[in-house]
Length: 171
Image (spheres, helix red, strand yellow):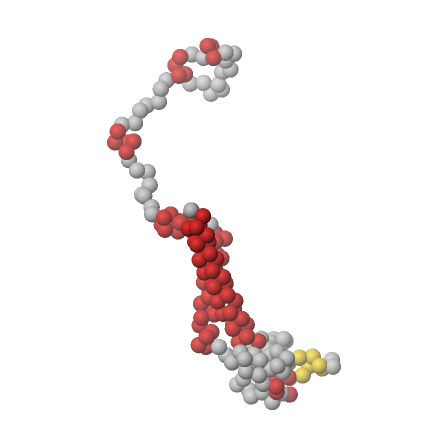
């Protein structure tokens, strides 16, 4: 067997032993299935699992949906309740004494405990602070997430309904 293929000037110069037919498979070998047959859902799931970005996005979206559902029942504060005494409080996370997360803010160049100044009880904490009307920002964020997901679901449902109707009409 030649390691370096020889160059031929014309096709007629190529020896006949270079044109041997391939070995034919038997009937049994030709009918053998290489991979199991998959239905539409199984094939779609297999292809989705190969796409790493789609898997990460699906996990992230599932976590967001789960959080938005769970926080209906365990929201730290009422997202629509206004408390004028708690206006613009900074974030405070219990047990965490990190600047910016301990309820203290710089006022006139001095570090002031805004929670003590507003007479907030020690057991009341706002993890993301409060807004200009004294509403808890974290609870409002959870409520906004639920509303956004609901709007997205309704928009997708309308899109499918209109698309199917248009497809049926157009044939």
